[in-house]
Image (cartoon, rainbow, N blue to C red; front, side, top):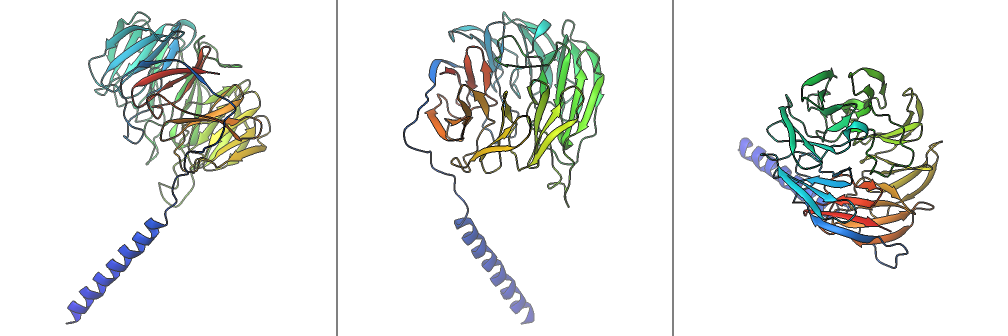
Length: 399
């Protein structure tokens, strides 16, 4: 009898818990509706071409970001095809299969890297492709990679999932150097990134990286400034210090690629803080404790960020003072922001592109992207804003 009462009591407690969970679920916050009303700024679609479908953003794979170089816009899809389009017209120039599924977007760089593109395949091969669509070489990366490569200083550099940075010679495909850092117990795989000198086709107003420079965001809140030629560390900064009572709370991975403007490099530490550092030394210029969820956008006057509730925040680039915030797009799973023309641009989970005034954060633009939600970071080029979507479209837009 006592056992029966105990079981009945336990069952009642479980049912009560389920009931409470149901009530809690019913009260769960819902994403805001797509804002309506007039807009004062519209982007024109210059061209839209078929780039092939990519995994959804919650698939656990790396993001698929396009690359620009030598007058080409180049995009990879998950099935293993890399396509190149004329950056001005969108006409397809070539298409090549690398023989296996691709795990992340296309890497490129400036200087001697102009006209070269790199991808990593699911079996772990690093593939270098030239401006005519010919595969220059294919080598085993020696581990799992979920981030796109970066080209700098005559090297193709990949960060592997075990926190090794490996540089391969751009001519021969031989491994040139390895840099190893300790991997935290729990990380956001595929969410950190690298930054090198940009291609001449990218529209970066005051980019300060030289032809052999490389910045690397790492899990655990660390930022590296390397020589891509030798792998030598110029400086290393602990941007965010992991804190908390468990591994989840201590996650502080630096997200996406570092953002550079003039003499400053700005980064987001997952759910922890937004920081700007001196590019020449790694010295902290300012930091703000805020639950950031995407890498920041930086221009001459503003650092813009997106937090975990899809609130868009803007700070003074030099001082870190708060300028404005906008929560109109609450819980709409916004992409990383980008600064172009009069607005800070973000896309949402339904593939709407929104423009917020750089002056006061008010919504001034809204339009639907061809192909849905972006598959990775949007790229600002000299021809306009380049956006690859999960639905398999590569779009070029401009005011």
